[in-house]
Image (cartoon, rainbow, N blue to C red; front, top):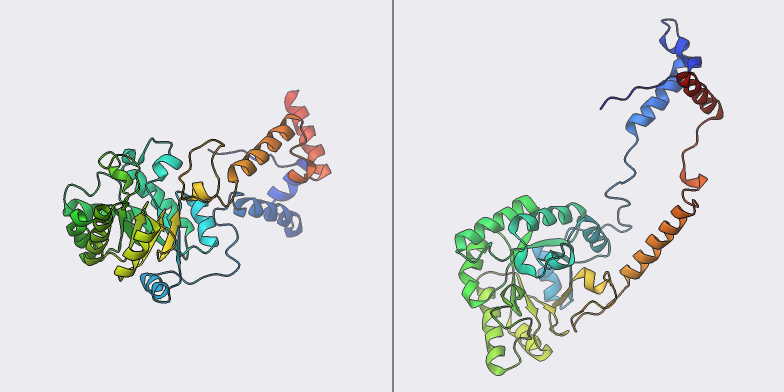
Length: 338
């Protein structure tokens, strides 16, 4: 949409005269140039990290595992959540299908579809410069056949711009994992409690509490390792079982509700940062490290109050105009009204 520009009367003659001196024209051109090159006030990247890190790769993760240094992973679902996670120094950032609930308000993870996951992966990848990023394959995108899973994984990596994919399942999905890894795409496994199959396992229930169940967790973990996974998530498994499984594996284990005997830990960022209203159910394994909800409420309520009382915006938040220009602008408006 084109916009007309009102040029003050004092400049009209000097600007458009063939003999206009450069000294008269230069200030106007300079101000116009500044207006044209001014960047948006909503800069997406902001300030770069104070201490830039090298990009985390599969080799970085293997080195951490060999040194027995815990691997840190957290979820992110959009640019801001990934930006802060990357700045905080996370080794891995997971675009988990938990975003179905914490970011999109869905009832469970089974509702989200591949296209939505890819959109969120792209948003996260734009904010991440150092952390190793992983995109979840949602329910329905990999179960039909290994070929379907590979196609979905390729889309998540190519379109979502992440470095790896994650999928749930153990022995039964080993052929699917092998199909993806043979194509050169890193896979993070996920055994124990598999939320996408909550209806088949009786809800969000701890796995591995009996000898038979614990053996099943171990068999699943060994199967995904053999299929080529670079690491495996152990979810909602007794700490003792998770520690023993970790010792049996050659790849890192990432625990969530599985004790500190795992090779690393992952939490949902919304949970651990306290970005939810009071009274919301939080799993037992979650430790709340902050209260983002309370701080956001305080800030928004203060903003509302100051707008209502006209305290905001104050002169410090406005752009000044030279008095002579304002006088000329008022004169022009008065002439137009006549």
